[in-house]
Image (cartoon, rainbow, N blue to C red; front, side):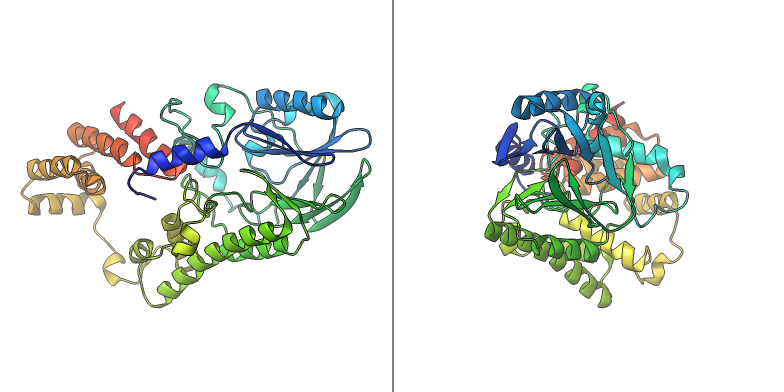
Length: 422
């Protein structure tokens, strides 16, 4: 989301939200936040500890193990992954000494065939999104948590699960603690929640965190089905939880507050989905809807729906392409000119390269950074070796990053600016 002082708002949110905390939620349950990019939940059993998620790096996992021993005097007997994202599994290697059982759920829907052929571009785009090449002063946070340890050269230490469940629900007693593990697709296909009925503790993984959710990842991902995510939030609200422990951001206390927060979170997602589908059915284009569909003030003003991670505009575009594909219904776009042919014709119409570059510089000076970027792209589509256009684009990217509230968007702007400068 581009607004005045956008990055400053991200900084303020980060400073208020991501201090390291070891919170005793209730007897025998701790919520560890701010130590890594993600959170961990520690549940004390009779002889050992049940650990829900393991942080993002081996080094941080080792710190977590020290905290666990300090709080409980016990080692980890069971690890439960709420989902497969690396920031929740990267610290698992720190706990191998006690030979824990490691539990995960298999996704019901497989990735598209041949997705592996995209690993190079997905790695590059992920590098940009997470800002791995940025300095600390450039990387404020990752939106839903501090920087991942990988940015500091720390290593991920994944441990494959020893138990993989294919069913939707598993109820087990583990080390004297009754747990319900339930499949709840949302941010990922393999997402689960963990319910501890005796403690009224509900661990929701990444199906809720205190930002507008990442309903589309700019690194490139398959569609995250918003309608299914909404159903999963309904399930979370059906539990009589007194403590909601997310995989990112802080604990929510009290059943009334939990239902209010999850309800608003759910209604915000539903609003974007419904308004986008409604506009699509009326023949509106992807670009038109991305510019028009906004969160209403009653949701946009809530502290847990700030666009510090996901972005409404990107969500609208994801919904459009998921439901109708690339074609917007305009026959002009069935067989468009190539980017180079279009750029060359537009540049000639505008009086040549010198005029376009002059207009781009004037736009940058007037703080019309998006227009500057589009003019620079026109020149670069015509001549990919146009160094002046590339450097001006880098300047505009750096400037527009200051308006971006989303850490993902900010990182992408700054990372691409660095690449252009070489």
